[in-house]
Image (cartoon, rainbow, N blue to C red; front, side):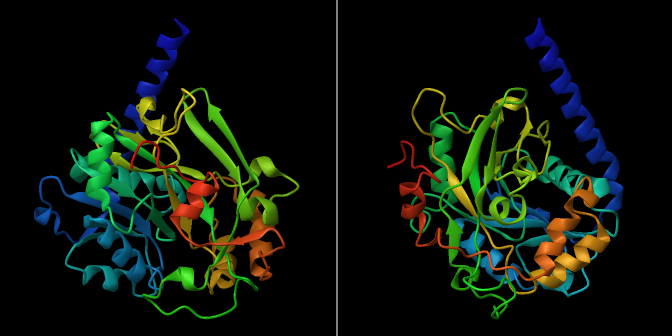
Amino acid sequence: MAGALLALKLRRRRQRLLWRAFRRRRELTPIADRTARIGAGDILGFACVRNETARLPHFLDHHRALGVRHFLFVDNASTDGTGALLADQPDVSLWHTPAGYKASRFGMDWLTWLLLRHGHGHWCLTLDADEILIYPYWQTRPLPALTDWLERQGRHSFGALILDLYPEGPVSQGKVAPGEDPLTHLSWFDAGNYQVQVQPRMRNLWIQGGARARAFFASEPRKAPTLNKIPLVRWHWRQAYVNSTHALLPAHLNEVYATDGGELTSGVLLHTKFLPGITERAAEEKVRGQHFGNAEQYAAYYDRLTADPILHCEASTRYTGWRQMEALGLMSRGGWI
């Protein structure tokens, strides 16, 4: 009886999320709608962005090389030329909105509408602009090979760990040109300090730890950012992300981990948040108050970032590639050989 009641509550929650997305579609103005070019079987990329001209050239090149055939972006009132950059890309469809990011569930209402409208039947990769997806054999096996493998295993979703990368010195140091691989600058990460739980309500993972937990939330670790996401999903119009891409409904799609003692194939999202310019951006976002449900709780986090911290420490590990990630237990090949 309890299981049936929970299933009903989750179904109603999913319906409410879809209804929110339907209502907020009016906040989106098409700037370059090239969705007619989407072909059957194309892998699609989705993102909501603001002022990301420094990251987007490499973001696009990397995920194009992986096999994303068309990108659907929401530009949330950028002022740095992000909209013009994206509008010029032949494989990008672009919508603009000046509406509130927090009020749209941090952009997820807008993306849910685009996923509902254009993603049905496609494998869809939903990312932030500061996330770079890697997975086992990613240099030689593109996304269509991975999604074919997942489908043969009866899986329609793929999980990944967010790995915070940082420089050796202060986070403001150096210079990264647009289009340059951010990993030439962000070479370090925390190899340990991760805690994993399974949330019983929706069966999703909850992973915390890494550099941000160590440097910014040491006194309140339960407030540290969630580091697990489900960025790659074979989409159906009835599906909806609940909290960023950390979890989605129906709940069975959150089971991107093994429950029989084995391992499922998984990936890593290389997080390039700490590029030069982060200190100025942190000061701006503190004023805007759009990135957290209770912005006042994160005032100290923004203040610490604005102070230009050094995240590197004696326990830091230099990043070398996906095989290192597997050896450390941060991603898995599962049965994909």
